[in-house]
Length: 459
Image 1: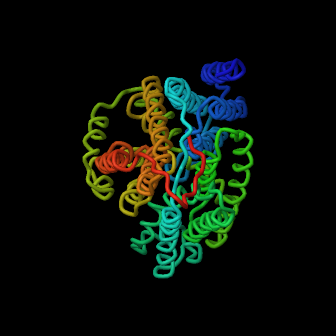
Image 2 (image 1 turned 135 degrees about the vertical axis):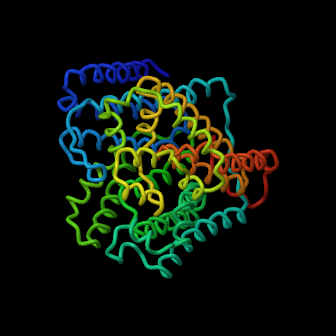
Image 3 (image 1 turned 90 degrees about the vertical axis):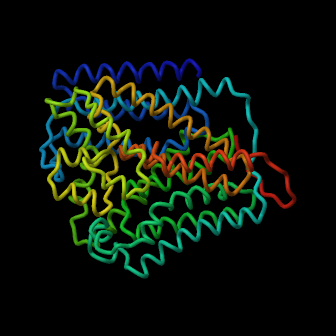
């Protein structure tokens, strides 16, 4: 880390603490633009000072930005329709910023400081042409299942219904498979898009466009679209080597992702005969509602909740998603919805498979209180950094099984970090996937040069 980056990092930490202190004087609303600016500076420092593995966390960083913007909107008086609260200035945005700083500080320490102790790597992805074709076929097969789901049950975009109601009424298992595995397709297409052959790169980009098209047809909107695009270019940028301008490239990619995402939103809400601007504003507010709800609960926000913590630990043994979401009393994001929302909304989150986009920081705040949850956020950032470093190392193992399992672990990591459902991060299914992951590394991890291989620089 050079001196300029150290100064920028110090500015971020000092500014986030100062903003939190000023929020106690009810200046949070006036300082909201500065809060967002400090977060953007945090992302710049994160990308400048971390290794290439940090690019795998950029989609989560973008989602966290949407959460912060949502809390700012709430503090300016927005109404949270799901929990029936009217927002006012309580300094919630500055508190969330400090938690975000804690998360990315932990991640930076792993990705930069620990990386210095590791020997420099110049590994390359080496896939045979057959493996590259199989990777492309797997990605296309996932898209095909999404298309079959639409042809058999209809597409949400053309139904005139919001995607959650549509899914609840359709019982669409193929769609559930597509939504659970679309990130695998994006991951594989991102790797192939960095290959040496122009024809192969074009096919990979076409595959990515197919994922995006099917995603939009099924009613997915802004943050889903942005996350997929940023994930694709993150994997591709990692494959391009050390010479890339990460910050500049992701500014361009972020702008493109926002345009595509807003287009997806406009199509979705137009099909439902809704006012696009009003509907987007209402949906944007929901991103930060759980953090705000916990921050505004003066009676219980600073108290640790041992009973809830114990239930979360016990929930990790649930064998499937259905077993997890049907636990009673509820855990994860459903516990917050049960506490702060009405019964019908809780039921929709449980029975219809609806999952809230951002809940991790709010749930940690709820479980441990504000200051202890800062430490947990930092540890969670370190865990996420360890995971993405392992995934990047596994990519250089030059085996298709490693790539597919890595992509699945990446999907579970993103889901768990977003929602506050720690079963996705530490549950028995994830542990089983990790066992398969390490087994695949031990068996297939060593590269063997082959004739006719396509190679892309990885490190």
